[in-house]
Image (cartoon, rainbow, N blue to C red):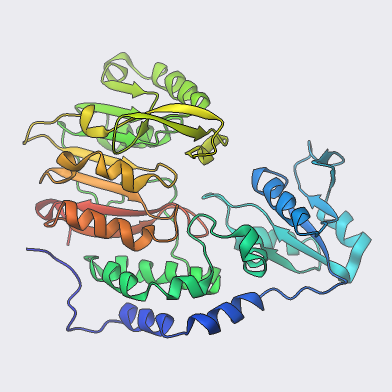
Amino acid sequence: MNVTHDPTTTTAPELELEELLSESPNHAAARAASQLSLNENSVLALYGAGQLGREVLARLRSLGIKPAAFVDDTPAKLGTEIDGLAVVSPREFVSRFRSRAVLVVTIFNPTASFRRIKRAVQSQINAPVVSFLELAWNYPDSFLPHYQFEQPGDVLGKGDAIRRGFQLFTDEESRRQFVAHLRFRLHLDFDALPDSNPGDYFPRDVIPALPEDCRFVDCGAFEGDTIGRFIARTHGRFREIYAFEPDAENFRKLKDYAATLPQDIASRIHLFQAAAGAERGRRRFDPGGGMASALSESGAEEVEVRPVQDVVTARSEDMVFLKFDVEGAEAAALAGAVPLISRDRTIVAVCVYHRPDDLWELPMQLRKLAPEHRLYLRTQGEDGMDVVCYSVPQKMAST
């Protein structure tokens, strides 16, 4: 029997969902376009001179907009130029431009909270500090979609699918988090976001104790951070680990990490320099750097793609835990693991924030593949990132 939200009972998350979806797309588009108020006297600086900052700079320049500086607190960057733009401290920038100064935060990763950055910067200076997402709403053709973000009017055009996705979740906390992420995308309401549970794919209110026969499959293994947490959670008592990582530099660090582990643990870890996908082959790949590496038709490199089901086999009585964090290729990776997902001893954790529709489309895909499993939603990261949907067999589920 499927366990989902009872449609005959109206809950607080459902009321909030309907309130959010009742806005007209045209009204939402106008609201988004007016959220960030800039005028001809405004002087922009980009706070964060990393990869995203450089991308935002290039796109602004293509629009004829010329930021005055990068602002960054990293000592090694201060006083330098990056892509022809000076890197200065917040105080130096504001002292030069005073009431005209506007800082746009171009830092976006699961460990960085915009609210914390804003508070820290405004403790040093008196100037507006805004998220680059507000800038993206002003210039959507140049900046959107970006990860899970698109124009609010486009989100509202998908109301029926959003409602179907919402109904699939088992517990009130999942539905509350679903609506909170939707509110964030529609209103950039950072205060609405759920608290994060940093870096842990094994929330104890969702994931049961894992048995010693568990096989852990890490798709998007990065440098081995989740493998380390899995080993800690199981106290080293597990059957095998299979790790997929296509990025060459990440894979090198993954191998180095595995080599530091005790031999009895390392001997049960199998590493594959490949991306998880629906079919075996080769695909273009953008190494991107760190966690941003992804399959991309415009990628400069080519990598191997392997379906999980071609690598991992399990007896009917074996426990399998599948984790997918593959930078937007989750739907294809799930399609390459169908025989494993449909088992009644398989738990799935899949990221649902890399593309705008993933928050509801990937849970619907999981429901089709494993109709009797229960679905949960939990948040690991900041600013709407590292949002994970769990598919848990009914007999293992906590609620």
